[in-house]
Image (cartoon, rainbow, N blue to C red; front, side, top):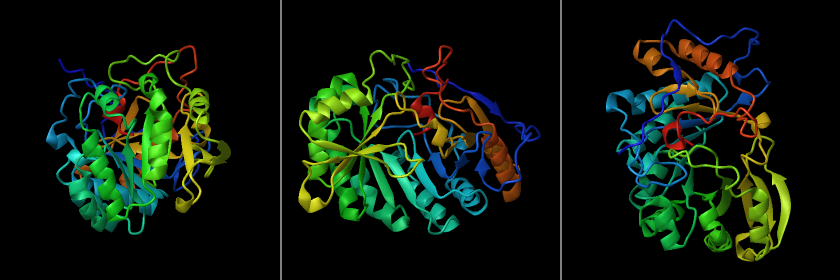
Length: 359
């Protein structure tokens, strides 16, 4: 039985735009709290080759009809508008799993042409990357983040519901060979793999990858998340410190979600070794958030935890101009909420799971 794909409140009527009352005459994606979004996340599919328990239901998400997905040309057009008109400085393609789209290389190529020089990144589980890394690099992809929560094969199989660790490791090797640097590894903190964290860090250091641990958020499709059961950044630091000497560095910049520590035990030949922790729950960075999201169906989602979405696909296909699309995008971001509110008494988790939103 497939878990239902939750649908948020989506403004689809082209004549009905979000309120912009009080918005300054600013070209960028400013919100009511003074934040400016410059980091664009574009989900291109809900499909995935894994079934990670913190993201996807066991049977996967219901398929989005092909005609409801943004095409490669439509994605590139929005990337271009974000870059030219809205102050977007970086783009990341997410899913689901981006590598499940057959036209991924074309998406990257057209986006690189639409926004020359802008960094184009991708978050992936790495399965199939060994066959496409070189082509993606040539098309204009500049960075890759690979999701890898453990290098213990049995634990990996249990967490992802698939025995595919060797395929992921082949993908990482191919990304290195294609020249993607720095290569980042994302690991979601889970109770059942906490003991694997020191070994995963040692593996990342030995393979020249930058490891970033992420606190699990209430975005799992099975809605099993409980704050009392999640692994906190503080608990992880205790576990890592049993093997490594960690020295706090801080954030690379105020809007960066990861706090970084120098790892004294890292191999000297690779330069200063670091580990990062994205403590989305216990050390919220919402006040400095600079992200804007486009879902696979072409809606603007201003906040990961906000269920209010604004349709751009309908405008695109109705012949809207770039200026009209930019104005609707600005209006959608003006209403961004202050933060996720996970710690609030009245917190309500979003209708969509992470797999349906995009990372």
